[in-house]
Length: 219
Image (cartoon, rainbow, N blue to C red; front, top):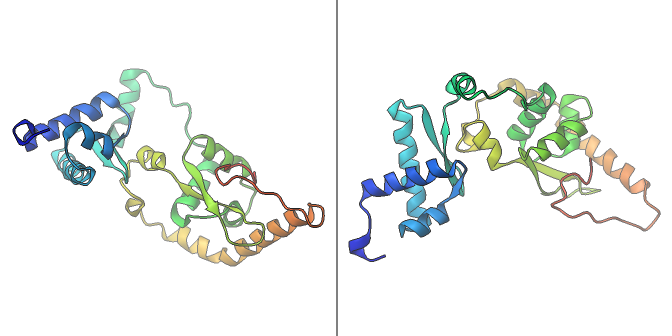
C-alpha cells in the first residue's frame, strides 16, 4: 500500500472497530497489521489507545488488548440485560471449587496441581480437568523437581472471560496471598511425595515420558 492509499488515523480506528465487531472473537495484531498496511507494533499501540478511549467514553463495550490479540466485548455490569434480551441461560457457570482453583492458579502461576491441593486442603483433580477443558488454564511445562510435575497457568481466554487486559489488573487479595504463603512448604512436600509415589509405582529402572502439551497426564 503506497502513501496515497494509506488510510487516515480516523479511518484506521474505524476499520479496526469494524473488523473486531464483525469477528466477535479475538483477532491477532499481525492480521490487523496485514490488512491495514501497518506494523503489528503500531497496531497494538493504536488498539491500546482505543481501549483507553472506550473506557473513558462511558459506552457499553470495551476493547480488550491481550498480548497477541484484541477483541471488542461488553461490560460486565450489562450482562443481566444481555441475557434477558437475548434469552441466554445461566448454564455453564463455574462451580465454587473451579473458581477457587482458578483463583489459586491466577495469583500464584505457574503452579502444580499438588500446590493447588495443598492450598485447598482437598484433591483438585476434577476442578483442574474442568478448567483445562474450558481452556481457562493450560500446561506450560514441568517443574524441575523429582517426577517433573506439570505446571499450570491461566490462558488468554481467562483474561477475556474476566474482562482483563493482563494479569496485572487482577484485584489484590491479601487473604489469598497469605493462605498461599502459609502452604508453600506443605505444597513442596506434597509435590515431592507425589513424585516419589509415581517413581515407586514404576518397575525399577523404568521411567515414563509424557508430552508437555498433555495437560491431563497427571490427573
